[in-house]
Length: 107
Image (tube, rainbow, N blue to C red; front, side, top):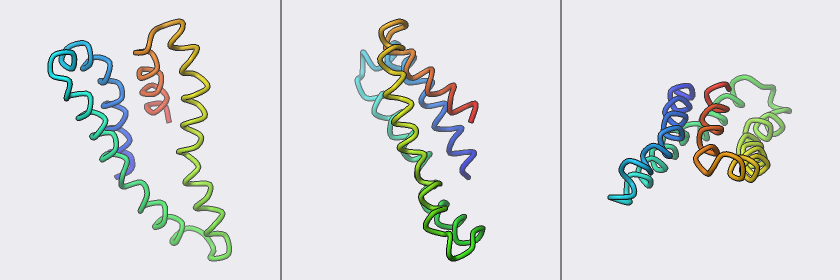
């Protein structure tokens, strides 16, 4: 489920700049739809973190394990904020979405 969600979210991220150029400038709604798809695709990761922690870790280490597993949001924000400025300055705003999609695809 996580891999499918990640694949859908990655695809939606990569398609946002294309959709913006082709369709959103006319309808202004497809961008919101892609962002919604990203959120829905990644939503199953939250309950799965608890399931994985409960089944794969000793009881004394569950809290630490959950902290590590949920840190992906903060790590993602750190990477995005660190790279967004230089990418936008050098390659335009679309490169931010392509970079994030590429990183998601690699991971």
